[in-house]
Image (cartoon, helix red, strand yellow):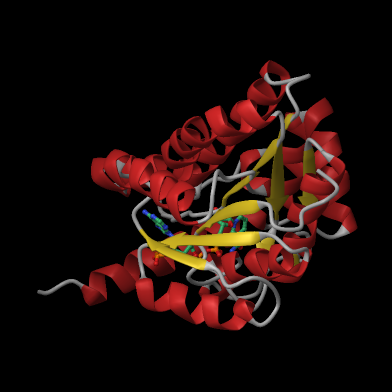
Length: 280
Ligand SMILES: NC(=O)c1ccc[n+]([C@@H]2O[C@H](COP(=O)([O-])OP(=O)(O)OC[C@H]3O[C@@H](n4cnc5c(N)ncnc54)[C@H](OP(=O)(O)O)[C@@H]3O)[C@@H](O)[C@H]2O)c1
């Protein structure tokens, strides 16, 4: 979709982290935005910032893992702004832990928000997009959805799911005018889930990218109908390509490059901080 002026776009996870950056990029392109997350306060702060860049955004506080809320989001947006032409499935939670220490509830929550939420939201906006013969869905995946990401195993499985969802639905919708893309960031700097990870020195093989680079990739996917964009330093982009040819080789490099040890450190630090915050 080249022309985005006044196209209605839903961005989930817009209350903090990379979501407000994606929203700002789309607002600058003229998209009429609906901002979704659970925190109304966070959404209002985003709306205030991006209201200066483009049309005044609609704030829709809601939980994307809840079926009733998903329907309410899409109905509210349709009623207030019109049918959505863009959906960015960005909302996500993480649980970094040794897998055997994860509760069933935390596995359920990560899959519900990161994977089920994205698929169910997409299913709800598709009829309007197909009727219009125009639309675009962008799923925010992760480099951890392309290769082994131990200790982020639950997130990795949800993000691998998003890759299959993106490619399969994209092929299914070929010729309809509706595009489906995925953006795979490596660790994001300054804001977001991993900004506060405490685990000593990050191995040189594990880079960081700015949130605006992720936002620009989302816009590029929509404008140029790219199937996927990996947002990472060059070495990790190369690893991404190598991984498609030999997942074993990429795993070997990551293992020997200290990436898994670093992730184990993140998991152990998170477990320790949870234990401290739980009442004795
Ligand atoms: N940060 C990174 O290093 C990194 C790397 C690769 C991929 N990613 C992906 O990028 C996306 C954004 O991550 P981030 O780093 O910006 O995370 P973040 O700062 O924790 O923000 C997550 C956003 O999702 C929203 N959210 C969480 N659960 C929700 C729910 N049930 N319903 C609706 N909204 C919900 C949060 O808002 P509320 O809490 O107000 O609901 C917040 O707006 C995620 O999909 C993540 O997996 C991040």
